[in-house]
Image (cartoon, rainbow, N blue to C red; front, side):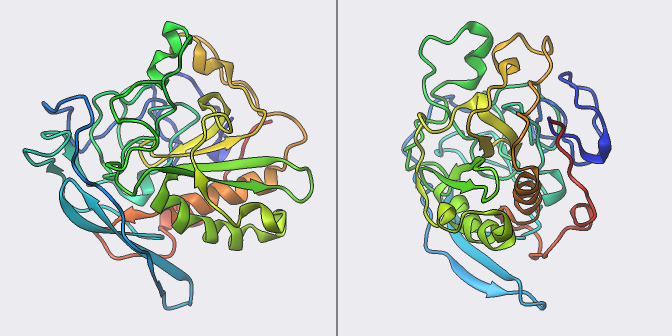
Length: 305
């Protein structure tokens, strides 16, 4: 259970302390619009990443990403922000609002549909795109009950959908060198490829060296939504824990507390991954890239076991 500032996590939609985003998430940057709810053929592919460095030598990776027919640049440590605009006519999800999300707004909770600047409740259907990226998807969910239907659907296509900004969904594993705990980063291909080396470098003292050197296409058999310990960036990035089963995901909304994380996991690695994702996950810039947003640099992130 994720608890910044030693606060208590709640499964309702009331205000949480800064950086523990509201339970459902949402977007103050705009409403649902009048778009079609199915994925079209608009190309949103990603290009080749490039690297630069900040004044203190910290590497910043930038990548061109095509979003609703327009080329934009995403960068690790970027500040995000910029104007909130409508998806143009003729593009998939035309009429929905996109942009405006900043780094200080990227943290969600364990709930699918969190990590938005404002609150909507759980699920991602009809949502705007405050960070331009689409939410991760978990497949069809055949056989799940009605209370879990919000985690599954075809609105944003399959994980392999090339129209997804940043490319098809990918994943990377990070295994603890002390407990064998395995966490998995799940997002679009560009995000995983650009963020993986940052995580590997920053958390190297906690990692089995060879465990995080490659990205692979998303595989639903390796990561399931109930294994998620944290969502980020409007639920477009997820961090999962192998073996974890948050049964609250399958219960009626606000009816059940999150399942505590298992004992004996590597919480040092978890905190390192979580903090680094918060500081470095790629954002499409409306402002200059910074190495650490002031609101993130002093935060001690604590997970209850």
